[in-house]
Image 1 (cartoon, rainbow, N blue to C red):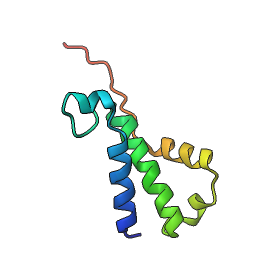
Image 2 (image 1 turned 30 degrees about the vertical axis):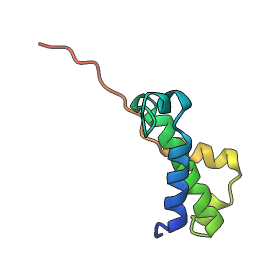
Image 3 (image 1 turned 120 degrees about the vertical axis):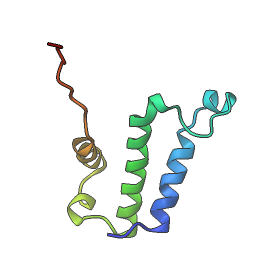
Image 4 (image 1 turned 90 degrees about the vertical axis):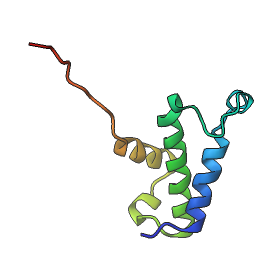
Length: 88
């Protein structure tokens, strides 16, 4: 489906709400990069909730309760798994 203005707004509000007082105090406009994964998850959840409210989400996902939607998102987030490198 298409990305709506409401979804963009939900992403912006979630991102802005993720900036801590400590980050603001040192002049950051965005959350610290070390929190990228958790902030990205929060933004994705906000956009998913907006899509459901607007009727633009997959009906199977929209039918899930909040915990199941969060689990669905967690299952879709890429987790890096690196092989140990041994020279030689």
